[in-house]
Length: 460
Image (cartoon, rainbow, N blue to C red; front, side, top):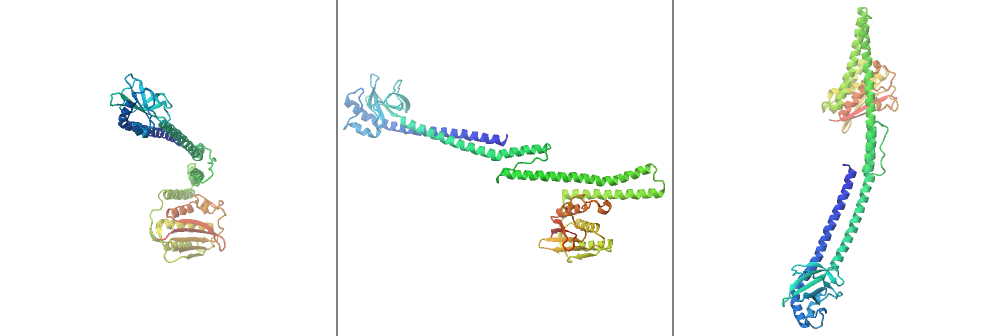
């Protein structure tokens, strides 16, 4: 069941509940009003018969004249000026003894009348009232007295109550209908449009986007979040396609070399031992390079899934000193400076942090001239330790500051794979730093150009 259907069903249930509550209120109020009438009749039945007996005896049983007269016993009946009183004579005719004020012609219908011990609603044969509540009692002379009271006021009050309930119910229903319409228009309709857009995107309309409603509503925030998610998903998908294509391209080159040498050997192209030895050397070199690519890919997959292997206190300073010494050994002509304190306690995995430093120093040696200076700088801050590898080479092209950390990305596409690496070193460095809850980046070297790669890790 959709949310729209649920809202409409809820509106219908509320209307039904209001109708039921109105009926209960009406019946309760009507019963209350009739109970008041019945209490008056019961009170009159307990006090009126003696007075009526004395009065009826005094008038000699006048058949139709109203029982009124100053100075007689009817003065005791003044509080019951809205009550009708009569007596059924021996001839079975109703003799009126007392009529209510304003309705002297009132006569209840006494057809099929037995002695009524409880008040009952009866119609009238004359008078202004249409219905009355009737109660009977035995007079001392054995005749049957009839007492009645009009229900006009009670029924009028009940009708006014019904009108008020109906008007209030309609007003509440209209307000609720407007609220439901407002919710559907501002809440559900945008969500339905978003659902249609999501279905279209799933069907292949990758350029489709959700129309974001105006205002700071949940639907507008959902639309923004959905568009952001779609953009992020498509960017991730594009990176994945590029990664697969690059990985396939990287692996295809050594595989082609291996297949070429095996085919050459099978065709007899390697005629002497020297040619076979050279071919085996080339095959081993390409197999080793392919193994490095596979190992790097497996490491990246492990970092993506599990993060850093351990998080424990370690000292970064010896790793930086070893990295600077290694650079001087590999490239003796390159000036290498180390600017770092004697101790740098951090939290991390020693082997992986060594791989991060190695990736940055290798990148500096690979992409700068051999006589260009490189500085390894480290500073301990309040909660983090910042390490920078500063070079003065050609630097990073504007716009490539974030792409250089993508997998298989080379800032200089003219470089060969032998001189430029496989494009995974900085990607691995970025993944390791992220797995250690750190940050990284690259900025231009301010002094004389070049690039400054940096990362920060939590301080122990």
